[in-house]
Image (cartoon, rainbow, N blue to C red; front, side, top):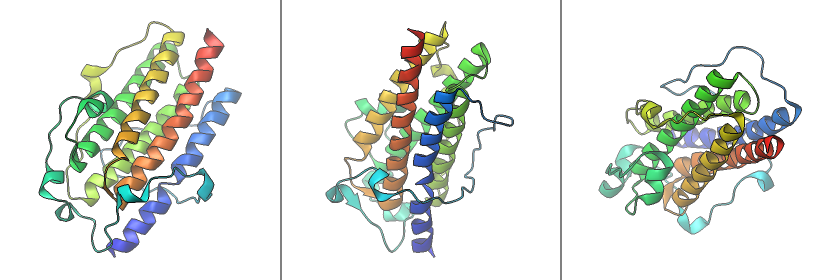
Length: 229
């Protein structure tokens, strides 16, 4: 049953690439999403699987991948990879950590997604529900949901969102867009660092999908900076 679950997760995470493409399209058209803004869940939600062509999925070197076909649970990790040894918060912490474990990576990842969601929520509260923030904040909620699912699969508690003390409210929409650019650059660099390590297959798939989504977010914010400069 666990193998089936891993296969399903691998297919599910590909929806993020399409979601990111939709964000860019809506941002370009300045179209806001319908309905009320969703609340970030502390537990995983079910996402309909969508297949993305293989040539649109990020490539990860095979030698860096550890495929656990028997079971993908916390007990399958080495004692070292179970150890939580954080040296900072979010992407900044991850990029300065010289002794990353799998559990470290998962914690840094969800911290950084919490941070991005909180930052974009502050921007929307200050300047209104404008694109690309209104679209991208919904993607951040999906990112958090996927990471929460991994924590649940490994029998670990989902970390609480304590990003509030790390948020900085921009003084203008231009500064907000510039903040978004830097946040996504750091987020992408974090996932690139993670993907250079040996990872369980399901963790690798989630990190790859989130990196791809952040690359699309970066393009949307760069377009906003050019528009406002």
